[in-house]
Length: 301
Image (cartoon, rainbow, N blue to C red; front, side, top):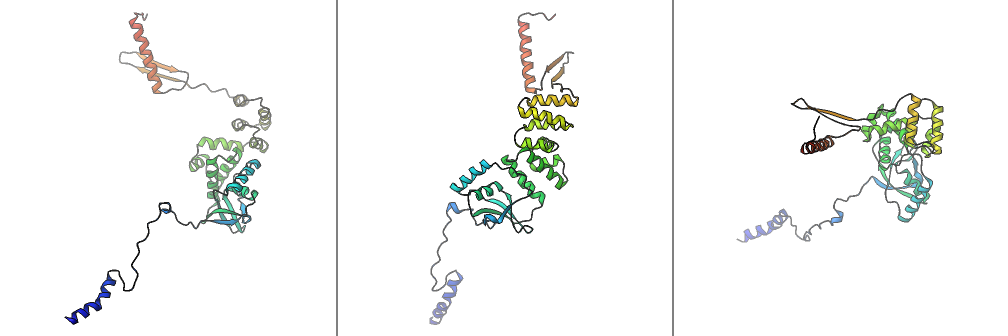
């Protein structure tokens, strides 16, 4: 019996250890549950701070026009509230500096505010010039920061880089194809007229009409009248049609014929485009009128 007890005593430590307990070790403490605010949070290696003079603007950035007044207002906000959103940057071996992909306006305002450093999101993977331009276009288009000519030139650059047509650009950027085609029309204008569009002297819609003319002299004459406010968009479109020798398109209309088994034909027409719901309402109104005439014994012939 003594021999059995001594054997069990010698085996006790091994038995306890096999069950997760060690002699002399402090009792295990349960792991504290994370606070709800910390669930899902983790450190991000792609974010950090850079000296503000270690960044340069992207020479291919589609947006080049920054309002000095808007920059001053943003600089005041950064000075008071700090930088609320990091900018996106990529490293350039050729320049030996970080290049701003998105957020150049914030970077310029931060410099104006006197900041020594700026918060950044680092683009670690390689991006082709086309991919960089796509990202910049998407960001600016979503915020509507690009002026019409900047947008047109960016579309044209994307087409040249990828050998795309306007429809492919529209599909890639998720914008209407008409937006791309109208923007590209501005690039066909003389540089002088493009700048007048940028500065707001010529409305964009009217400038699109001017692009339909092949004669630069006529374009400038109409542009001068637009800048003076003596022409509306509709008047400009009419004058462009005249100079191109085209008549105004006939207004679209609706005309449908519904034959019946008795040989009658019911014709519904309107001087505009309509829907079947509108046609159904018109037929109900007509039927009510027919019934009213029957009740009042109105003769058909």
